[in-house]
Each structure stands twice: as structure tokens, then as C-alpha cells.
Length: 71
Image 1 (spheres, rainbow, N blue to C red):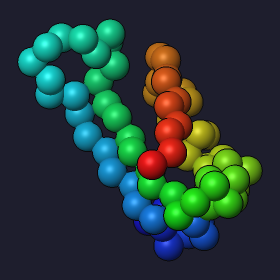
Image 2: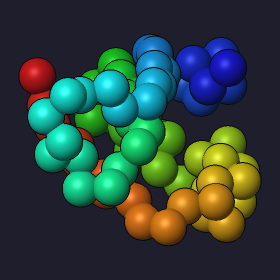
Image 3: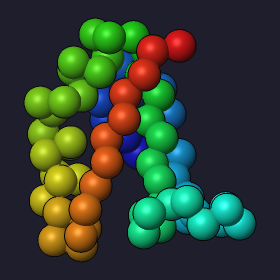
Image 4: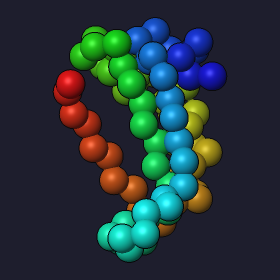
């Protein structure tokens, strides 16, 4: 699991869209990754485990949206 592999990644959740509103614009799945702080995010972005995920998912994805926010 990513939190055990990458320092600063606290949690990863994913799921399929089940909204009845029909406003998903064709997107079917979502991944939510929680970082400890900005340093955690900056550690993850160039990490080999992130690169490995990209290699797996890029051929399967038609499109992707990345949305970062700070709480």
C-alpha cells in the first residue's frame, strides 16, 4: 500500500462514481490521496512508486483530472 511505501502519504481511497446527478462528465472512478503536508506531496510526485502507478494506469485511462487542495 502506498502509505507504507512513500513517506508523507497518509491514506489512499478510491471508488466508482455513484452520483445520481449525472454530472461526472464521463469520469467513472476517483482516487483521493491524503498527504501529511506539502513536503509529503513533493516527496510523492517524483517517487518511483508514483511512476510505477502511472505506468499501470496511463494505458487504461482515456482522460484524467488532477485536483489538489489544502485543508
